[in-house]
Length: 365
Image (tube, rainbow, N blue to C red; front, side, top):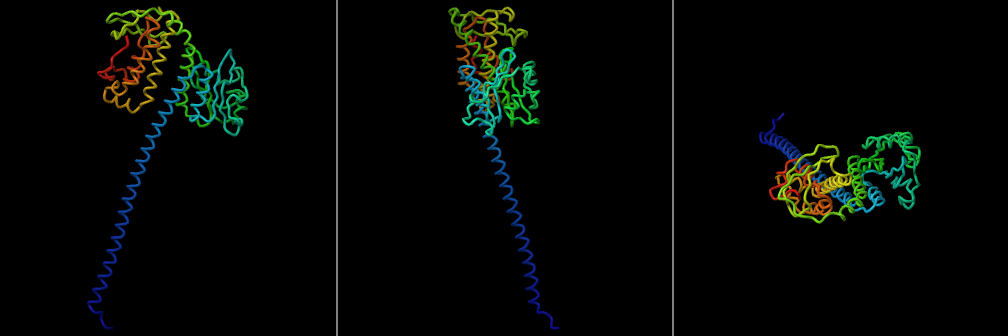
């Protein structure tokens, strides 16, 4: 056999080498491109998720803020019930608002699934439902404990009438939230099916505060109408603040901000029943105002607390709240305390007044 020419052998070796080199290069390019595309896609997805989470939080904060505002603007109990049922729709598919009178539970408003909702969808057109509270063990527990209750949707727990009206299955879980007015439970918010319990509980608490405020309007108005003409107070005085009924009073020194009724030093148990109600109403009003600030602008609040200048970040809402508190509560009694200032120190500033900032004007009295 004639041996192959050297040139042909060298050409074949080169072709094989370059063929393998091209294959390795193509594989390397494909791997690099795939890696870079994957990294870019993952970064894009992470960014999109972060943006979506941030947007969802902002939307939820705005939704809750609007819900609280609507509840606070309600002018009577009937409107409060309607608004509560409406603002909780995103957080519970089925719901009902019950009032309680003389041991009887009465359905004021209801929201049921579309398949069993009346044609016009109006809450007023739903069947009336009233039953003794003893028929529903879960309702009795809420009244006794004044705490939210999670129960199974059985006739013994929530009453036979309610099970039939909502077409509950025996293994369904239902939630009952008290509408606390003072020391009593004036109503119960009932929720079932995809319930976001923490959000519903917060709205139920705001509802109770609004019902309490509506119940106290005649008392506060009567006292305000008969209040003495404000007179200048001393440059500094000492008032006694009770954190809660039966709580130990705490002396707090405050500065004079503007002419007010002369402040009077009184222990909690030395206050009249009307004065105690005024103080409790002021405490609740302050908690609602401060909660609204946090819900309305959570980013500004966090930035202000991080820099130790909450007042600088929330100056306008804080001034609006101070004006409301001054007009509604500070003039009704010479024993009144600036509960708004105390609540801002506690809830906004983590019990450190320095976090409110150097420009914060201080207590109202």
